[in-house]
Length: 288
Image (cartoon, rainbow, N blue to C red):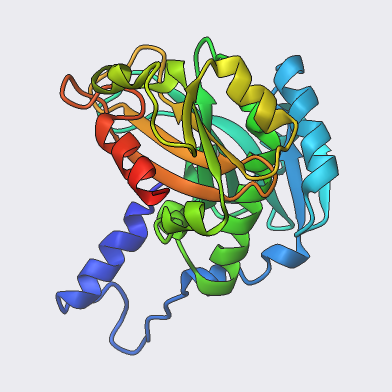
């Protein structure tokens, strides 16, 4: 959700142009300043209208959301309230990236109410706090329901970082280090269905005592139990990737909901969907 107006204005200042009169002085608001009221405002949690998804989304927000006061609302209520500066909104939306002709994945996003430029009022126009991928937008496997508790915790961590440091998007995730897998004594479970074509040879092979390629159900059951010392792999990509579609690969702790690995990249013939051979190699090496 790029703010093109802000980018243009910043460029004008750098190049020596002025968008204000000579007697006026431009005032810039940092990202940290823009979000300074977030922890004190009510977060409206917008339900999607999908009963199955909403049931889990609602339950996990009630169980885990701690950083702000919150209330639930419908999409219809969001349409009425989105221009109010009294609220921030946590919602699940479909994401469409540059080059795609249709949305490919679902994102959990938080936006600031009343922040759209004059005359604009869609969710895309509201100021984005954070966004995090949670599943395919079409024909989802349902794994996002298993991982929903972790998504709620991860988004809260991202929001807190945005408020405290002005960090932007998944930049907060790039500090992750696979070294923590070994430091925390983790065992990694990768679903067979999450392997890219160039990594299929790992099926049925011994990858060391702490990395196992297992059926998807086994990985999901361990995660749902919150098994100590286990990090499960999860791949998020469109069901039918297009030019510009992204694939996200991540490892999430089953009990601590920590992100131990987070990578994204465009899907192509050379870079297919799933954990690639290089990803698996990095994970195995980190645990040696």
